[in-house]
Each structure stands twice: as C-alpha cells, then as structure tokens.
Length: 159
Image (cartoon, rainbow, N blue to C red; front, side, top):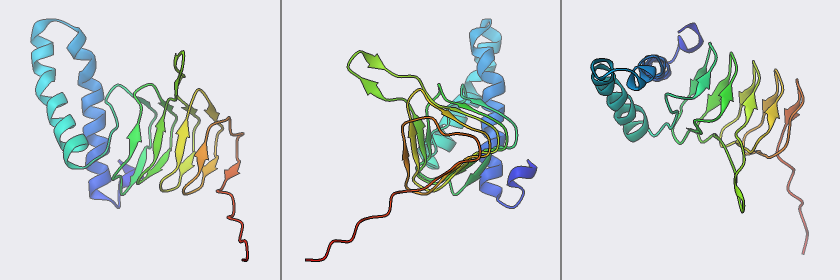
C-alpha cells in the first residue's frame, strides 16, 4: 500500500488485484469456495478491466510494491512475471508475440524496473533489475540490469 500512498485510484486497483489474486485460487477448489470467489473475481473484472481500462489479470505473478501511475490502457498478459517494486504507467503493454508456430512466452521483469508511458515489451525476454524502459519504447530483446532503454531519435531530413 505504501507504494501507491499518494494515489487513491492506484491503491484501489492494487488492493483489488491482490484480493482477486488471493481468491482466484479458490475457483479451482470445491463448489463452496468457487461460489465464494466468483463475486470478487467478477467485481474485479468489471471495475478494473471494463470501467478503468486496466488489464491486469488476477492470475499474473506480481511481487510486492507494484506502483501504477494513471493506468488507463495498461495491458499485462497473464503469463508475465513482474518482480518487486515495479512502476507501470499508462499505455504500457507487456505480453507475448504471435508467431506462425504459435505464441512466444511473456517477459520476466526483475525487481525495481520502471516503465514509461506507452512502452511495449513483448516476447520471451528478461528485463534486468533496476532497468528503465523509456516512454514509447518497443522492447523485443533482453535488457540488462540497470540499463536505460530510450526511443531512437528521429532523423531530421531537410528537403
């Protein structure tokens, strides 16, 4: 909760995510627990995904200290692994890539990684501890620990 102390919306989203994650395991158990879990999972899906536009499936592996800034348009594939103290901003997409033979795996994001607005990270890759993925970057290969990934500067061509 301390990670989002200054942002009530982000605090509510992370609390709802943690609750939905906790009860999502119940849905694989007996009928009573499955019935008890259903309202929480439906409420999470409606509130967070449909109303707020944040796709963070309750089955996603997320470490402690998740921070979300703004959040609209945030998409995280359920197969993604997020470490501790991750910062996600609006428009970030983290997921897999469709290939001819099927899909590739999802990223594994180490602790302390920060994503800028509209960053896209896809494929079976690893983002190293403390890396910063700049706004608008498209990342499709491994990023070493502590690296700063920034978008290429556009070339100015005079006519």
